[in-house]
Image (tube, rainbow over all chains, first blue to last red; front, side, top):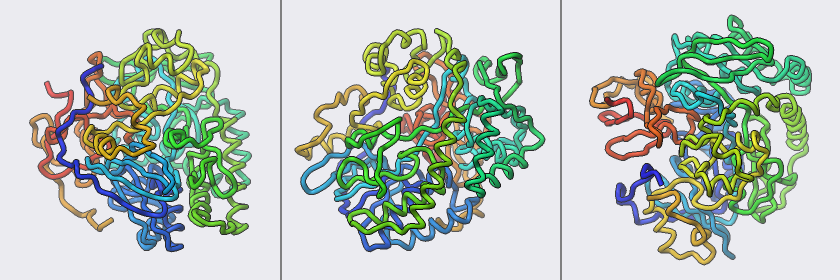
Length: 454
Length: 89
């Protein structure tokens, strides 16, 4: 126990609100927006929940609608007109099931919200995968997507020396955006081999719009160095980042930097799906042609079903919106477009898989769990994530292992752990609203509330 | 989604200092622009700053208007807001 978590008594909001709808869509990125709009247009009562300040998710993150692509503006306008109820700044804490359907417990701006629905569409998106290395906890070291989010929410990188090192297609748009915002992009280092990246680029002809976009991104940071087969092994600085050590396996050198953006691709946010009981495979939710999961009346769309990008997410969202609560057949062109983008996504995984050398990145003194400051030397001997949690507190802090566990699974070949509610840190007043209600099938009775809340 | 882009700056108080920042941006962005890199102290006393930018990692926690452990990346600046970070000496 660290004495550092969430205190009670800050909020008066114990009088819980109740929302009743046909469908709850969880997550307002492209997939969730398309699902919510399509379902609401059919006359269904739709509640769209999102923890962010604005709809759009990460890829369409914006402030007051400024600087988002046309397709995003069109979908947001369509969502506005669709009649879906949008619940922003709302995090799901727990989901329970009974004969009438689902009851979702959420925290909405500090208040408890109970959402009763017959159908759920999970559009919980993805997060970045991190591999820990010495110095990665220094201020100034952030995710690649994290830097993009900071930029899109008003952060200025002008004049800052930036190194981007990691893997995956996300590096290109972020490099382009940072360069255009005035950052001094020192190096963009892709850990995948040149031959693999070339193979990926060659495969993009199947989705020409993606190929064109990749070329346009590269053109926008042409003056910066882009290296394949190159990765960062350590970050240095006393109280904030000052430099990084870079290697290509043959040569090792230092670069001074104010900001290091790192990340090894995206991983689906499957926690809520697992809590509900949906089957997952290779870290993604298993769905059928109608985006239905293995749990009745629960569908999943977008990155949570496997990383595929915004165009695929929109298609999957539309399909779920058309099929939720019905047996309507999906228009053939939509199915064909989904198949095309899915094939492209599968190739991406092989190309950008982290190389074996990255398993040697953390040293015994490298902090792996940033919430509890647990080092690699301490967790290394655990046989599984569960044992590490129980014995070392790794993964037991407020992020619930979302930041360290995917990296540890890669480093130590662990398997994914089970999920228990509350799946997001929540105020005790929110939880007590659930306990007081005493829902018959509540998962909460099994959970050790004291672990997360004090 | 209003047309609020032209609004003037807002005034916030960061670690006791009055600061003028752009409206509508997140607290994390405001602190980044002010050059404040250490937002919280870890359990072993290390300085920490924003990592994921999307509410997942909890590294950017600060005290906002006396409420501790608020994620700076999930809150927009508001005129008169008081923010307390680990950079306060």
